[in-house]
Structures are given as structure tokens and as C-alpha cells.
Image 1: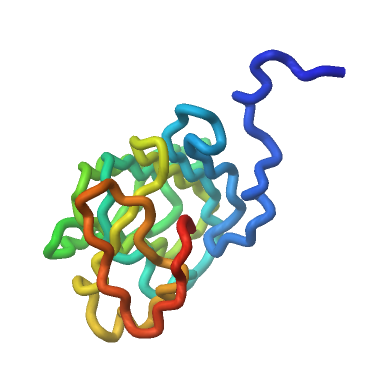
Image 2: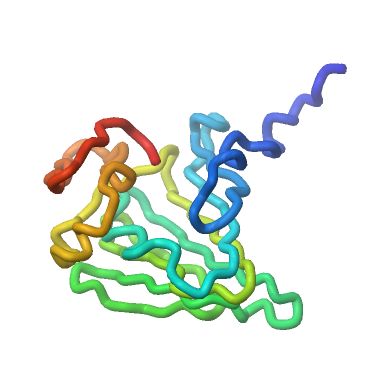
Length: 183
């Protein structure tokens, strides 16, 4: 039996669900390659943990377009309680913020942010990243991190990705191996 006309807009059984993600199950990762005209979205669960799952977190970076970072609590009795403690550093001076409530963070284009790191999670919660462009863009600023922190990151995973024209690629740290696109 043939599918319905608009089935392509109902995303289930994503290939990304098979990916073993450090934070928890991936609900969906999509962009204009998934559905023509779609912005970039990354939606996943963050499962309980007592210690950070990443040593440093998602390192300092910018995007060509604005970004929304949604931290959504799942406690039906108190939806504002995230059930977690998430560190997010913003600006070139890396101003530290700790997120413990359901929160949406607006990141303007070209605004330095990160590291982002869930430090502790006592109850599962949902994270949604929206880049307001047709594909994911990212330029890292490893020079903002301490030498010790840079040494703890796997730079084969964290790399510049599809930035608009006029952006220079980051100086590749020692040990750099990755030359592809996307993460």
C-alpha cells in the first residue's frame, strides 16, 4: 500500500536512533538534507548521571545563524524543574551560567558560547538544539580554553563545520586527524 502524500513530514525511526550518544537516546537530528527547506534540529534525551559524561563539554564555538538551546524538564508535577545542573559559558570572557530550570537560551549569530556540559542529572530531560539555518554550522575557538582543557578534548569529534564564506577555519590543535564534515 502506498504511503500518504505528506508522510515525509512525519519523522520516525531515524537512522540517528541507532547512534550510541553519550547523553542519551537521540530522538531526531535533521536539516535540509533530511527534509528540503528544514532548518537544523537536534533533539535528544539526557539520562540520569552523577558525574559529567563529557570531561569538558561542547567546546567554545560560534554559528553563522542564531541558535536556540532548549532544556526541557519532564517532571509533570513541576515542569520548571529541569532535574539537572547544566553549565553553559557564554561570551568571549566565558561567563558561567548554571541551568537548573526548564530554560530556552537564545544564541545570536557569531556569539561565542560553550563549553556546554550537563554536570549532573537526577531525572531524564529533553534537549533541543535549533540552528536557524538550513544546515549546521560551527566554528570552534579552542584558544579560549586552557591548555589542560584543550588536551582533554577529542578534536577528531569537535571540528569546524560548514561555516559561511568569510570565516577562517580554526587553527587545528596538535593531534588533529578529522578532515570531514558534520558530527
